[in-house]
Length: 130
Image 1: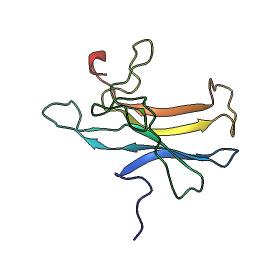
Image 2: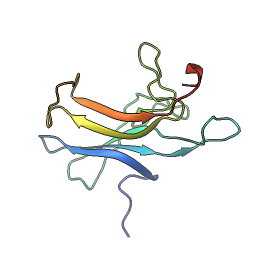
Image 3: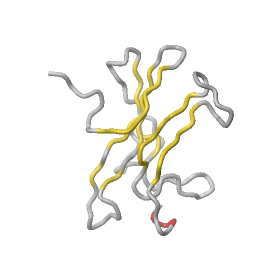
Image 4: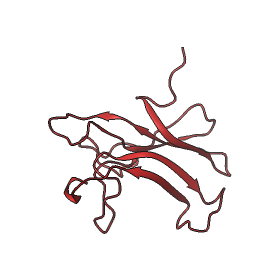
């Protein structure tokens, strides 16, 4: 019986192979929320995993985003996130789909760093819900 590459279930994402042969996968997991406490029914944090062969994947502990009381996860972009200027990055529920561009394998003139993320976010009426 085959096991899923990443579990629990996921969808939208990007898988890229760099010039050194390392595969990187950015993917979303859906996390059900309590409708009595939350504005949206699910959150969609964006994760990162690595592979040398494209079959066996490692989920590194990145320590970037606090989720369910811990930063011991591989989340790169979660719900309620703000940038260094206090602007909402994703809105309340997290990201909606994501595409990653790698400037080292496919250069593009507007790249500020190696990776550029293109994604949708859930709008909210107020920044306090970000």
